[in-house]
Length: 325
Ligand SMILES: [Mn+2]
Image (cartoon, rainbow, N blue to C red):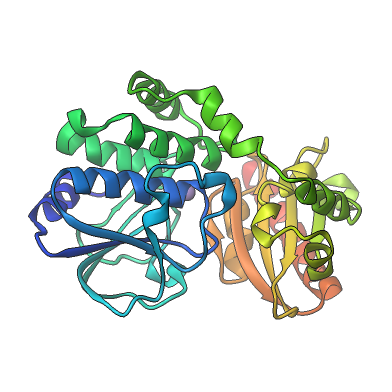
């Protein structure tokens, strides 16, 4: 674990222009971490802005100050740029100009952006890491708005407290955030229960592609571009679809491949159930993530991409099964 005081002191010291950023295809943890830190730094009188490459998924549009998130790239240069919930600035997928860079995160591996980075792969979410920083700095400035952003990241990144990185601290942090005014059922409802019919139609098409391999240990789904276009849903609506593949009895690794607009690139989301480390699978294709949730991108046609993945997953299951015995 990095030195939390160094990170806090560096942020305190900055009187110039600060930019907060998160990864492309942003999720609840990236957006929640960025918004929480933004609200806190604003409260402390800092000159701070937020930006990311892709739009805010509609399920997170209820979060405070979400409309202030700008679109990257920006023409401006900053004194300090902080990337949240990403293994490095490369995950932002757009240029960011700054005199100094910093990373606040919980991904395994990744780039050291500065000596002031604060990264803890044991943390269930980046919002847990951000929560530690804010508590260290000034606990009294954590209001219900900041707490709601932090809770949203914790809820979504743990797949509703199901991943294997859900530990005592995750529940203690959740309890703390509720004490700060978070309404858990309201947040869950806003995040998970505002689907449009087009999303269910897209899910229906994705589920029809279910493929089971390796004696039931691997389950996969595909979302072809024509599914997205045909239903009027959007790519971000596929969030969570992979969990249907993971939910099957006996499955050890589940994945979904989502065809990008160029039709040759597929975005891959891998999920484990605690036994197989899927981060190692994603890493083989230049991606990364966590033990139970990781991602990468692969180019090719659907069949080839699936075959490559299934081959790599089989190898990892065999390799990791040997190690764990
Ligand atoms: Mn995260």
